[in-house]
Amino acid sequence: MKGKNSAGFFALVISIIAIPFIITNDYYIGVLVFAAFNCLACIGLCLLMGYAGQISIGHGAFVAIGAYTSGILTSKLAWSPWLAMLCGVLIVIVVAFSLGIPALRLKGHYLAMATLGFASIVHIVAVAAVDLTGGPSGIVNIPRLDLFGYVLNSDTQYYYFSWSVVALAVFIAFNLVNSRVGRGLQAIHGSEDAASSLGINITSYKVQIFILSAVFSSISGSLYAYYMNYIDPGPFGVMHSVLLVTMVAVGGLHNIWGALIGAIALSLLPEFLSFLSDYLQVLGIHYQPDYDTLVYGSILLIIMLFLPEGIFDGLASTLRGSKSFYGKLAGRRTGRVQ
Amino acid sequence: MNHTDGTFIDVLQFLILGIQRGSIYAMVAMGFNMIYNATGIINFAQGEFVVLGGLMMVTLTMAFNLSIVFSFILTVLFVIVVGILMERLTINPVKHPTVLRLIIITIAVSIIIKGVAMCFWGKGSHYMRHFSGTAPLEFFGATILPQTLWIFAILFFVVIAYIIFFNYTMTGKCMRACAINRDAARLAGINDRKMVMLSFALSAGIGAIAGIIITPIIQMDYARGAMLGLKGFGAAVLGGLGNSMGAVVAGVLLGVLEALGAGYISSHYMDAIALVILLFVLFIRPSGILGSSEAMRLKEF
Image (cartoon, rainbow over all chains, first blue to last red; front, side, top):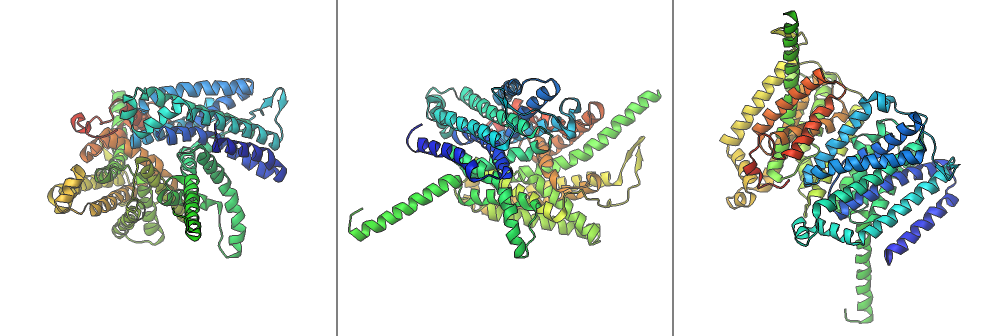
């Protein structure tokens, strides 16, 4: 990592440390823990979508596989949470490999539909395989995670732990992006034929990044299971996969920071809306949580129509634009030739 | 002897159920194909048109007590307007379309339609009266609902109308010309932008019809769009994307396989059967079993 990115990373670490001192309400810390899970999955998805240019509307399935593997192994077989998480990662690697090899030969709409179909199948299995997954009633008694024999009991402890994982993921992602592999992926995004003529093994690169992004999702699912101590198929529907894509797209596909901002913004949105609803009440508008879906869709549509590069790049280029605008003004005033 | 009779009746019953489901998939697939042919876009909001058609019909027939025929026409017109609005407001203004951006835009529209449907019609499923009674008819020992016959008849009618429109009317021929080669069509004086709008209108209309005729049987709710869309896409791919007659055959085939799978393997995994078939077709032969691989070589998968 260099330059602006390392400054950004430093700012991220500082804010992670500082926020619990500013926000002391356990509920909001809990909301931020959920935001961390989404961030983790979105960083992986951003590597796949933004850098390698491959769409996946199926990463919610990898989150589900991670969560269910952790849940089943710890609650029914009394495995250690860490071992169960590792096992979830291994299963996801195998699944992502066997799905990725045939699926990543497809492009665009076909890949999107194939991954969406996969996500849907995983959700159906989670509901129907009652013996294994508990069906609609789910799995209870999932233990909390322990760190060196020290159980993470409070929300603040879990907050620090999960955001450390996010920081680690950001670090890994930036190192990957600025490596030979990252440049290869961007070449694939530009043109597969050109990349392949330069000696980049496109199939192997695409499958590897697909697996890596799936592993990020799997870990996010495991952490979710340990935090909630309970899982059911509800949050792992197709909509969750769509939501992850939404987060990455809203924040900005081509930038890890964009994915983080999108994930945080949309994770906090329901809280913000319920906060806003008190004020709308005064104006005579009865806002209900049911409207959230509509708001999500509208935000996504508006961003895609007017800021197709996402909030992050959109704001950055607006800032740059205004800077050069003011620069020009200043230049004119002092009589400098541009 | 009795046993074999029972088996025959079972199979026949599953076939009827399968063709009934398949008719809906076929119509969703035809909707996918129309937009795909005109624009190269897969419309992720296709399933939402079906839901909207079903729910609007429920309101008009059950709450406003309008006649079936009148509500049918009003509902189709309503969904066509939604389709046109979608094209005008979200597809037409995009200056630099990339596949990823278009996919996300149609997903956004599907989320919005779903959100609106949830606000207006709530989360429950809605009962709608059948077109002509619920007394089942006997058919070689199996039973068949009058509504099922309506579904078969309307699919037949839609297919005939489709063939007449695309082969014997000027507008239909213009749309086909645009699908084959947009630049050449434009040179010949065809307004290709108008054809894109028309394709969304027709696609929405056909989706609405599918929603209207299946609602008395499945009791529509706001969340069904994604699954209907996915299975319809499965039918479209199986029949060779862009090939609507292939889609009809494939849709019916998919419905029958699903019904047989649900009957003989497991009803819990019924929804997964069509999706597994979709994945296998995509992975092994993305040009579809009924599409010619020659023509498909020109397309990008």
